[in-house]
Length: 114
Image (cartoon, rainbow, N blue to C red; front, side, top):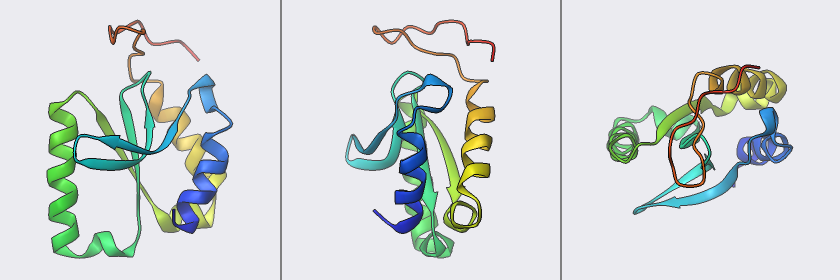
C-alpha cells in the first residue's frame, strides 16, 4: 500500500459510521483499495499516476465493470489524504449516508439516518 492508502486505512479500520471496510479487496479481475460490503462501495485512492491517459482509461474500465456489478466507486486524491486524512474521512462519512445499506443477503435496506 502507498503512504496515502496506509493513512486512510488507519482511519477506515476504526469503522467510521459503524461501517466495516476491507483493504486490497478482490473484485473480479481487479483489486480495489478499500471495500465496504454493506454499502457495496469501493474507495480508490488516486495518486499522480492516475493523471496519465492510459491509467485513466484503465480506471474508467474498472469503474464501469464495478458499476455493472452493483458497486459504487468513490475516488479520493492521494494528495488530499496526505494534506488532511481526517477531512477525507469526514467527506467519505458524509458521502456514504446516501447509499442504501445491504443486509446479509445483499438486499437493500433503508439507509440509516445519521
